[in-house]
Length: 456
Ligand code: ASP
Image (tube, rainbow, N blue to C red):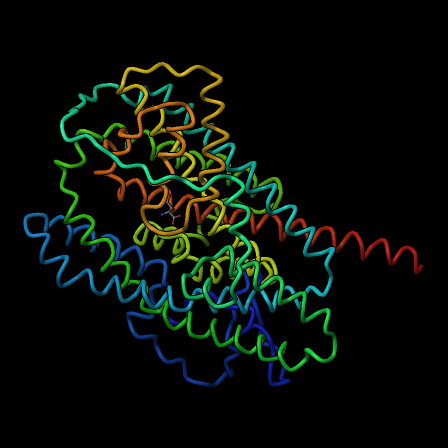
């Protein structure tokens, strides 16, 4: 399986001074084999790619979950721990991985303007794609009449909305007052700020910072190596994550909300097929099929784990394998895993309309525009962990005066919705990273051509 793993930029580099490994156009390393070396047949489990293994695990997990629907305890006691261990390992590596790879990325850019250009484009792409996402959610929910046929059981309907932080507090909270706390709590936005600040600090300190820069570069490589090891066992993790979810979500739980699930899934698939394929074609000038194929393991893992932050390491690997530079992935993807949640925005739009229809409340166009604005902000504030989008849904409902108790209506199927919205969230991050990288490369090529002309 290992030879089918995405390669990292580290493995492409020729650290020992020898000739670089030949890389194919898609970044895959091909081993140089001597002509007469006898070719050993690969063992059967190595002949399938990681993507295939992840999908086999996903299907087996769903089947095992269906088989265990009568006894979900067995799935929770004996199978869930494998998923939890796997997710714990990923969570353990994600903070140092993001910290060191962003520091290494900022230091390697060595140019504040370039960081600004990447940052500016990234944020613009993130905002626009999220705006599209929530609009798509609203259109699907209205056109397909998402609340139709749902008979509300008002008994036992209660939901305590936790007060969402105000906009100003959200901005203030991005800046940490302590170096260690954000690492311990895995508050990714704060970790990103620390990494960027220290990266610039190292550039500013000049020669004196050389030893610490070398340590950060080496630590970034160490984290990538550990992460590749963890990814090798991803199929076991996927199986352990999906099986208990299916075992605990019987068809009885899903049936009353099946239409909501269908509408939300369709809108989310549309976001991938129309919006991401569109920007990949236009801005990255790449085949959307190639992009989606490269993202398959990422999507499979996001679907099973329902965590953008948990999927981040795999996303970095796969996006780099598609040829996106490490300086872009190491900055754009961690930021995306924290602030770019298009699937969550779609979910919030669809659920807001669903709740309005079920409670018999007509929303004006103005109110729906307010939903677009608040859903974009709410998705930015959503943490990349399972279930957090549902907490932020309360904020969207409150913004147009819809009853927050409505959250309780959709809570029963939250995990099922979360799996798909996380898949969209991470695919959106990768699509933007691919576009920003292609634009940066074209800008660099234009600059080089101009410089050549001037020199000539
Ligand atoms: N679970 C989602 C994610 O990690 C966030 C959400 O709950 O919407 O991207």
